[in-house]
Image 1 (cartoon, rainbow, N blue to C red):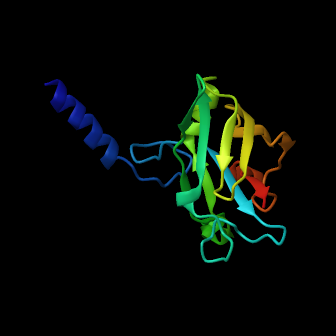
Image 2 (tube, rainbow, N blue to C red):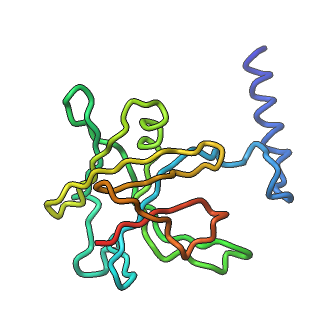
Length: 166
């Protein structure tokens, strides 16, 4: 009987979802989890994660890690493709992004405060940040002790994506 009621509830939520009001939550609403996003670009605003460009960084060579009891542990991430946004999706954010929810989970749990970013170029960068849960954004992001800034081309309402010049 419990399984029947659970199935009925799930079916009802799925069928009642119309998504006419984009601000309402229904059974087909995506789960929004805290994430850290970073783009790598050069001083000419070229995406260094785009493998179509010479000198780009390959995902297979990138590693993000932290240390636990002196042992280095890898952190999972994906490379998110450029995306469209805004009214009728007419704007495009042109950069690939390193994106990790595990990075934020480790930071929020205080399991790790310092992370290591290896882009495969022989240099390992130290990454630190705070996470503002109420805003859903990383704050006070530092790479190698230097404060880095959010990408200015993306409106603030779409959360912050930080960038590293390489």
